[in-house]
Length: 263
Image (cartoon, rainbow, N blue to C red; front, top):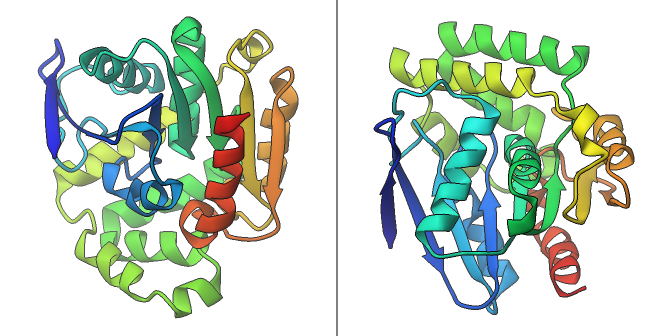
């Protein structure tokens, strides 16, 4: 069941809580939806209270008036934890969710029991800037192709061959309206502007970085650089799976998370 939280700037955040036990927040990437995590939640099994949300301006959550930055999105996530009475939580962030999780760890270190940062980065380099420049061009001119190419770049070809419904779903939900495109464009600007590398040496929650060697959206070298920037961070690299390895390599991914959560 979806619940909602109203933020001071008028944004309404839709969130979901499932299960019981120690708190675990899952934060999705650029798409910003709670539904991304449904296969992962099923594979993780019980023993945790799992909290997910649609990020502001996405799906069932409204945009509000505050400028969208990574810190804004991090404060939204902390507000959801407040709303559900969570004093401490482990946080898993995928892609853009991983930089949101980093901000949470810097903004409220005493509340974060650990950070699993998957397919994410410390600072966008030229590769990311050029990739997202091209994506923005598609977003404005050919939104269905924007949705389609993300899958062709983000998943291994063999996995897509066996899961064409993923493409059908993406095309059905393509950002066709100017308002949908505006929300994604400002989120892209936020993720490219994120740079707290100077602070990562002081990141207090224990961190795990998970990546895939064949990720063409956030290259493996950026994920290694992130792990190296965080003192004591563990690094787990999957040999394949593309950018969306929580879905394409779900069993391996959730196995790593289960080991981390019980360590």
